[in-house]
Image 1 (tube, protein in one colour):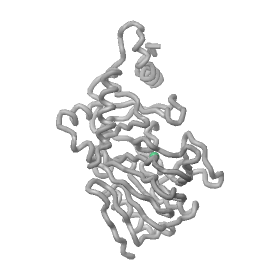
Image 2 (image 1 turned 90 degrees about the vertical axis):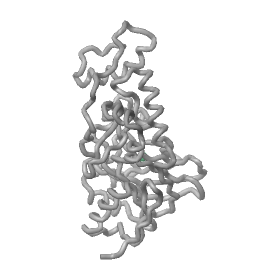
Image 3 (image 1 turned 120 degrees about the vertical axis):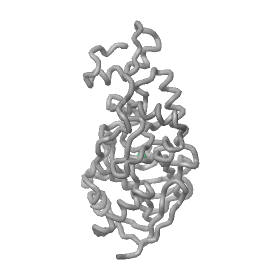
Image 4 (image 1 turned 180 degrees about the vertical axis):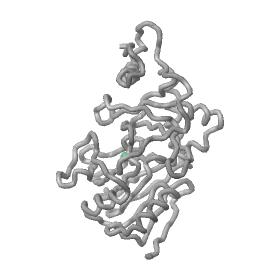
Length: 298
Ligand SMILES: [Fe+2]
C-alpha cells in the first residue's frame, strides 16, 4: 500500500494528504479517505488535476451523487458535476453547509480547484462538533430541543424549505454537531420570531470563532473533500480575477436529531398585526406539512 503523508492543518479540523492518486483510487484508498474524513472532517489533496470523468467516478465511490437542485449546470455531458465560477457569481461568501434546505442534504462534497486567482480566494471550514462542544451546558440543553427552518432563498427559491434539528448526530461517530447556518437557516421553529432572530444571530456568529476553523490556500489541481454533516465552510471574497471550482456532492442521508423537539412551533396566536408577517413562512411550511390547518398569519 502506497504511503500517504497526512499533515494536520489546525487544532480543530483539516488535513493535507500527499502521496494519493485520486484519479485511480483503489477500494482501500476509499476506505482510507472515509477513515481520515472521520478524524479530520476536511481533507486536501494537492496536485491531483483529475478529469471531469475521474471526478464523478471518485464521487460515486462514496455513494450516489447528485447535480445541484437549483443552479444551472455547465456540463451537459456531466450532469452531476457542478461548476461555480466567480465571474458568474459563484463565490459562497456566507458560512454554510451545502444544500441544507433539502430534507437530506449531501453527506459530503468533493471539490476540484480548476482555476485560482493570483492571490486570495481561500476557503475556511469550521467544525460544528467543536462549536457544539464548547457551548455551555444550559445552551447545549436548549439547542438540543430545538429545530430550525431552512430554505433555498440564496438560490431565489424560498419556497424550497425543510426543518432540521438544531443539533444533529453524526450517523457514524455518534457525535453531536450544531446544525444552523447563516446562508440557509431562517427561523428557530419553537421560538417566536424575535427570540429566533437573536438565537440565530448568536449561533451563526459563534460557529465562526477562529478556534473552530481552518483556512486553506488553494493551488490549481487540488481536490478538497469534506463531511458536510459536521462542518460549515466559507469562501473569502478578497480576490480579483477568475476562480473556478468543480464539485460533486454525494446524496444525503437522513438527518438524525440529537433529541426530538421539546416544544411546539411558536406562531403568534394574536390577531393579524404588522409583525405577524414574520411568522408567515413558517406557518405556510407547517400547513404544507399538515401540521397546522390554518396558514394564518397571512
Ligand atoms: Fe458550499
